[in-house]
Image 1 (tube, rainbow, N blue to C red):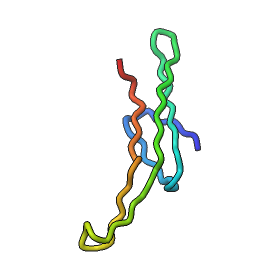
Image 2: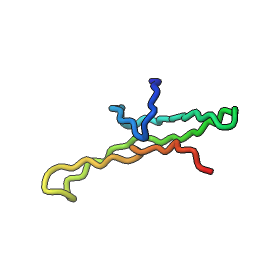
Image 3: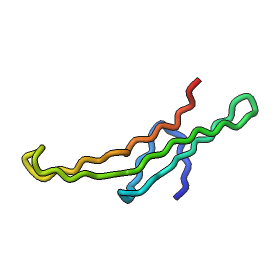
Image 4: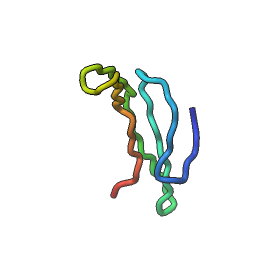
Length: 68
């Protein structure tokens, strides 16, 4: 899956138990800088923590901001 966003956030629906990687490309002083982040998207089912059945999602936030 590929896509382009120019905003600070991008929401996608993805399959769980998969590893995902993002690459953000920045242009600075005529040079291209790539920022890479990745995580495995996991879900945990829990009956005891909530009044009803609960699902907890892990690995659902990636950060490809350019940091100096």
